[in-house]
Length: 121
Length: 144
Image (cartoon, rainbow over all chains, first blue to last red; front, side):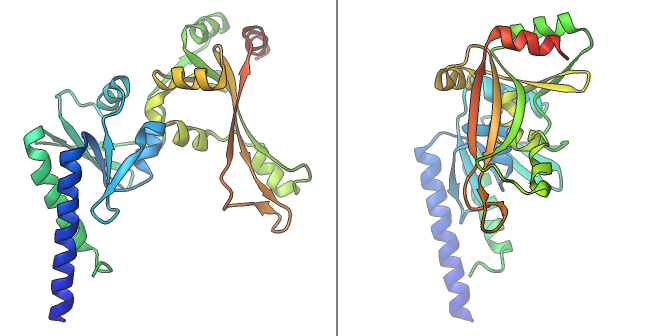
């Protein structure tokens, strides 16, 4: 039992390390928690990098026009650097992030998502 | 950090415009980059059983919108017709790839499996985008 717990902890840490590495390498602009939202919103501009054990879809910067329509579609007046989209029961829960908040926020989300998942161990 | 909840009608295009006058409609269509004047669901096989033919007669709105992406589509409505204007930069990319002037028909071709007598869920659909000339599009709109 103790071993299983340690194993899980280790894998969560590995996933978080990978996530941090991706965030350093790519210019991620939109993060989705689940399909089918990325492609039904962005179409061909939804190509994403999977992270956090397939729980997060990281989308790189879309063309300027598409990004502007994204902000308009969701009624966003401010200028966020990164948008986190959680689609659940026909409701979009959107978190607008500034550059310096991105890493900490996503690491927290990822670790919560992995802890919640009982099959993951 | 800001937090926001937005209720969304599933798969509604970025913007929907309504027109009642045919001349205004035509002028509006001309203003757009790339307009899909018709959506069609097709099959690669001739002898389709009637229950599947019924499926084919429904325009594949949902599949079309979820493929192109809500944020790349503006819908233009006239009576009970729906035209779809594809927005830039995707419109530019598609025009180049499919050699489209302005108007096109968008088809999704499903693969029929004669053995199971169903559309094969494991074979991906083929997308067919067929250019339509200005004259043909004009005649089509006039016929509505």
